[in-house]
Length: 114
Image (cartoon, rainbow, N blue to C red; front, side, top):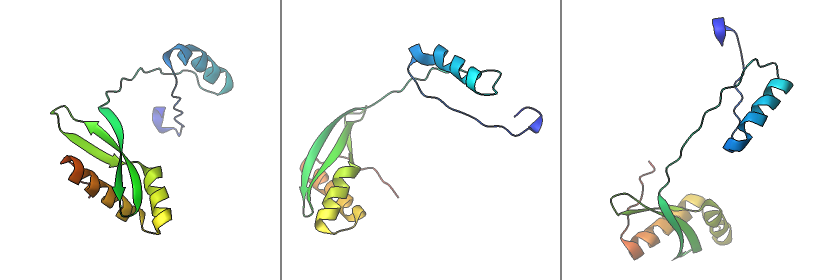
């Protein structure tokens, strides 16, 4: 903080119409003398959910369409967890099996997570 003093940084994420009332609340209820407000944009890839059959059961994946027209898939964690529990296999093994099944069925790109 100013002059090397210790301080805290409080971040509030909210919809734009709530910014003014939340800033007033923070100044009323904390020792803060000011509040910064930022407006952020988020660009998202188009995506859809698909299910694939694996040796561990069905697993859902999120498939994103990349700007160049290719696709990338990421296994849905809760779906992987459920299949892992049903099959008594490690999460990573189930996730890799789901990606391999998707790759076989679509020929899509798989992100390198190493």
